[in-house]
View 1 (cartoon, one colour):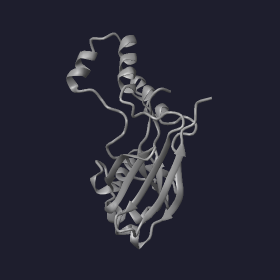
View 2 (cartoon, rainbow, N blue to C red; view 1 turned 90 degrees about the horizontal axis):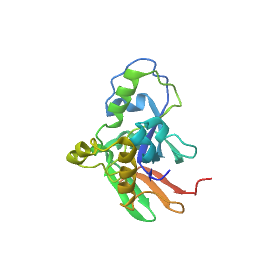
View 3 (cartoon, one colour; view 1 turned 90 degrees about the vertical axis):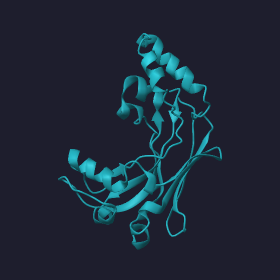
View 4 (tube, rainbow, N blue to C red; view 1 turned 135 degrees about the horizontal axis):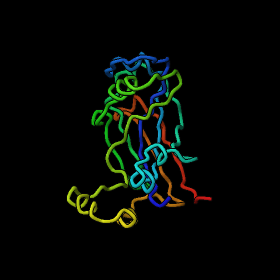
Amino acid sequence: MELLDYEVELGLVLGRDLPDPVEFDEDALPDAVAAVVIHNDVSARDVQIPEMQFYKGKSYRTFGPTGPYLTFVDDALRSSWADLRLELRVNGELRQADHARNMVYRPGATLTEMTSLQSLSAGDLIATGTPSGVALRLPAPWVVRLLQLVPEHLRWPMFIQRQKRSGRYLEAGDVVECTIAADDGRVHLGTLTNRIAAAG
């Protein structure tokens, strides 16, 4: 893998089965969510993008570190969903930082969509999306159109080389720290710390 990327996400751990479609808003989340946890949705962009394989690109062994604590939903968390701040640092450099209130799909919308597609079970972990700041930089629309003229066997090596030049992708030895906490300190899910190891 040449383009190893990071995504700090709020993980929802279900407390009950959801066999049928359910409409959720944030107030209804505690009815189905027993706990929350930090999740780093590690992604191999050189697999995910050229192969259009989101499952494969995010599912290699050791991908998706989760922890360090499972935080049960309590009154403080019930009133703080939108105030949770997601942050990710690589070697101490802040790469991602935003509040859950600014997510494109908030946790309630994510659960609503998931239950419309499939049955979920107590204990399932649902990752809810990531703030801006990942290493992946998609080209401008006019560049994408121009690249359609390039033969596929040349297009993807060009894409990978261009992405690598950013210097933002993870390499062996990098330390990734993910933190999710409310600004007022009432909720703190800890810090998930992982060191990137060389393949093999």
